[in-house]
Length: 271
Image 1 (tube, helix red, strand yellow):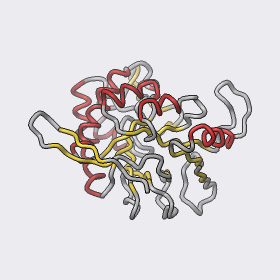
Image 2 (cartoon, rainbow, N blue to C red):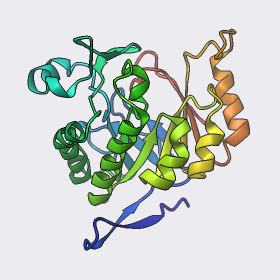
Image 3 (cartoon, rainbow, N blue to C red):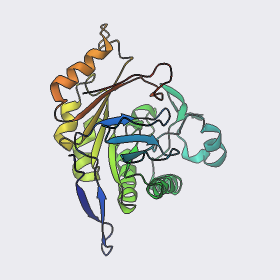
Image 4 (cartoon, rainbow, N blue to C red):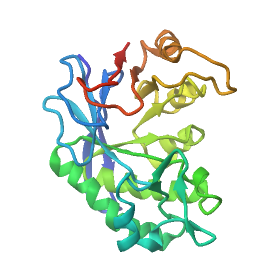
């Protein structure tokens, strides 16, 4: 039986210790960002968007796009918080792979505090809804900011997210920026890692060194090229990952849009 460890953390100098549970180590993961559906009986961990309800009887992780806007939310952000969106030469900066996602401006202490007034309540709501952990996406947003952001700024905001999650009795995972894994675990306070395509980019061992067996790997079915452009069978990354670390960490294979089971294009495997 997989047991989620209980971790005690102290918030502030005089605050009482709080307890939260980390995800079950090497527990089978189901990544449901494209829409909620009933997970299989042997699934231990379910990741869902913050606007969805947790899955009954599972360890639930709440997805929060903490460093970029969600697709479809650009109009709201431009209307209500245009000063909290990264601009370069007077133009909004967006993720080139997800053009509906604006980059949040975390470049200063004041802007980070203002963003926490927006993102912080999302985290609190995840806790009150019954989630056990947070997945704040796009820690690596500085690489898409056209030089406006720095790794230091992203880490400073990450630290605020960790503090807020732990205060709400939630674990919190590192997502992206494998090169920051050791800092994320040892200094920022992330409790686990969700590692997308770490087999493709040869990053799985970097995450495991920092987070042990509490790494949750997702490989996708549209990776038909290796990093230098050679044609590959997408499932080969998943198969290699299963052979290399599938007995130590949770490894799954999903369609890029992570659509619900029963929907056209749905792909899910686990090892």
